[in-house]
Length: 114
Image 1: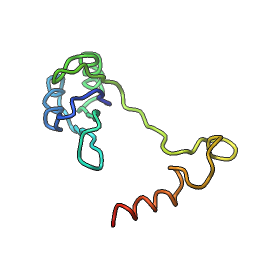
Image 2: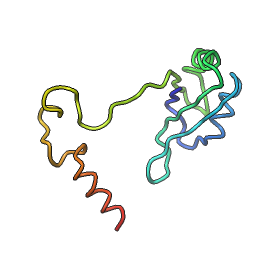
Image 3: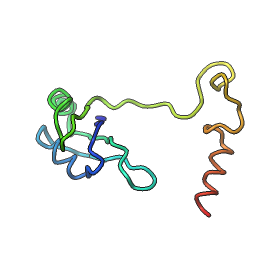
């Protein structure tokens, strides 16, 4: 499940404890940026589909650590500039220099190593 609008100080354990009221949590993770600060969302997996559905129904729009959280089924997300159509890139963006460009990613990686 996707859990959004988390307090930026939420830990994996606090997220697990909150969801364990609805069943057995098999995985909980608050997503952090490269610098270690929370991105304000995370993911939780429950032991069964029934427990997950019950958790979504009960905990979506509930209060957790002073914030109204969003809980729903996690979906896959497309990344980068790729869009499946002729040409492969969104209009208005060149094939070179964009964030989805491999050379851009390599330059960024080299800068972070220095």
